[in-house]
Image 1 (cartoon, rainbow, N blue to C red):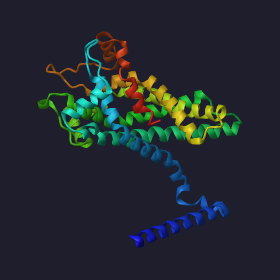
Image 2 (cartoon, rainbow, N blue to C red):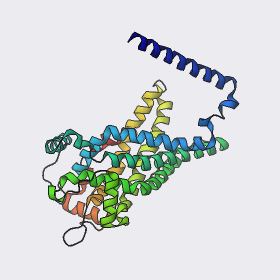
Image 3 (cartoon, rainbow, N blue to C red):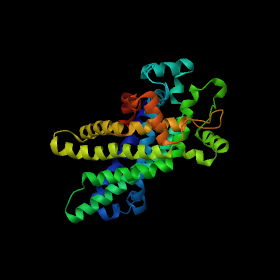
Length: 321
């Protein structure tokens, strides 16, 4: 045991010496440092996308149970006004009681694929747009405006949502499958199983069901999340300079999470309803589209139904911010 500890210490010491040597070399010879792998132009351009995707996937592994509960709350009491209002704890307890604790992670493979595609794109695009805006502002001697950040967030969210819609649809189908009678459940084995079976039985176009509210939701989410995060962090630097970098980052995340939830929850609600629906005995879907779903929810369930589970949604969104 002592020998293992000694070897570990020696390895750590050697690694530290290598890092110190590399740092010294970078300071003494910055031109050479810029030619290493991480400073290659192609790698620098790809890093925002890679970092965004990895960050989104890590966040999903942490908040997947919360997302599962959020979806079940949105689908509860569909088509009826009033009735029992499910609580997050009650929904989680019911899911565990019907199966096991790991059922809270149903659809994790779809959630990870969605982040690998959607979050990689939206954060990568947003960071790329921000760098372009910053470079332009430096040339003109101005600063990036709130409207410019807003446009960057909206554009990045819309572009990424179209690409990630199939994975998003598979996620909703997998999470809502347990609400069906046992004889009618699809029991998807993975996201790829869900995607292939949906495409075979409903057509390739079905993978983009709910694309309109998904795009609008993503644009609203990015507007609230990325725009308010960047703006809040900038304001905290100016108005609260005594806060550390970490405190400013988490403070900005909390603010951004609230606005992202407020702006996007109604569209997320409609997206969930549209992506969960399946054809009835008459061969028709319950909702004809985005506006039809919104109209029926307002008529049958009330306007405030769009904001049911706001607290759960905020807890699900804030870690991503």
